[in-house]
Length: 290
Ligand code: NAP
Picture 1 (cartoon, helix red, strand yellow):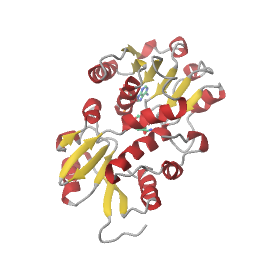
Picture 2: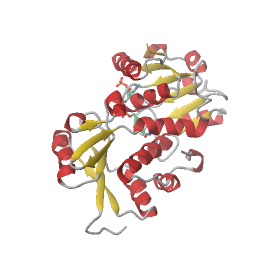
Picture 3: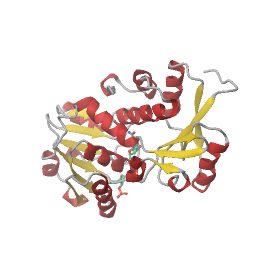
């Protein structure tokens, strides 16, 4: 990459950001398309969110991604919000346009693309989905599932968060059938009756515990398992689901999907998916089409 006097800069605001795969994905994509752009990590502590966001415009940035824990905190500091960002109460992509700060949520489309890339839309429409979790990732996935016409059951450790998620989905997609259940309702029988199982909790991340084996071991061929968590190795949930004959959707596919949408917002160009997938470290079976 060659930095010139006119290089346009984008970055990622989060705390921490050292683990992020986004700089690798976007810089590889800029290079592949010969764009004079660069993507940099921007570690920002929570008290500095407001000044960091305003600084993007002051420093002439083209935009930024926003990651944990700032996806909600940036909202009040933006000039305009896309309806997906308003619906999810979270922004993961900022575009700076003529000094204005525009907030988008491309995680929803990233989740939709990841699922459709593996299963196609027809396999999902009107089918029941069991969503574990009600945090930021779960909100994006739930809105994607609603958009795909799925009936959603949310199970979360904190029932109140699941109830709030249901309210967001019903406000965004009033025709969606959705309900939430407390964690103690989560058992193998519940898993069995759902076409799609999504893990959108932090379980499966290194050092964060695992989705209980009793649930994973009931997954069967004909079901689809979507693991939002990603890492250097496949989670036990995904590996077991594949062994048991289920179709699997990896969190890296969602990561690449949201990045491709953000890339298009900043550059006006279609993202080179194969370049981004390789830079993100997607294994062959994790690669999906647009
Ligand atoms: P978050 O907002 O902090 O939400 C965490 C969720 O996990 C909550 O529902 C929480 O339940 C639940 N949880 C945490 N510990 C638990 C436990 N011991 N037992 C049961 N549930 C537990 O985090 P997030 O931003 O949604 O991120 C979740 C995961 O998705 C992370 O691994 C993140 O890296 C990944 N992610 C992936 C993508 C992608 O593109 N693939 C995008 C975003 C996030 P409570 O509500 O009860 O606390």
